Every structure is written in structure tokens, then in C-alpha cells.
Image (cartoon, rainbow, N blue to C red; front, side, top):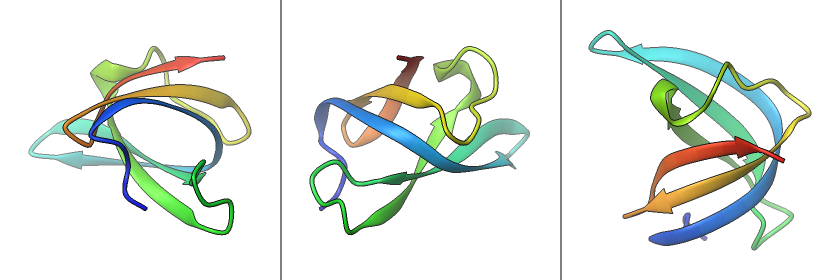
Length: 75
């Protein structure tokens, strides 16, 4: 199941891979889909949406708008 168009997900970060697109830093987070615990998925989080770099093992609340992560807060 894809990420929600609008809403929040509480996830545990399994892995983080930083990358850039046209000079902007993003984090690819590997998380378990909260709607299907058998599915590992990758979500892109822009640097401006989270305070500090995410790390594997931490829990985040992700905010979505139009299926894109617009905010990430540590739980």
C-alpha cells in the first residue's frame, strides 16, 4: 500500500541513506509499512522536514501531504 495522501504514520527507521537531488539533501528512510508489517518500504524525507539527520532505530511520526513526506518528528 502506498503512503497516505494526507495524514500521519508512526514508523521505526530500519535504515537511512542520504542523497542529493540538484544539490538538495534528502534522506531515504527504510521503514516497515504500518498498514502491512510484511512490507519494507523506502520514503524520501527532505532535509528541511526533519531536525538533524535521522538514524536507524529511532521512531518518527511522519506527516504526509499529497503522498509526500512534509514533516518528521521524533517520538
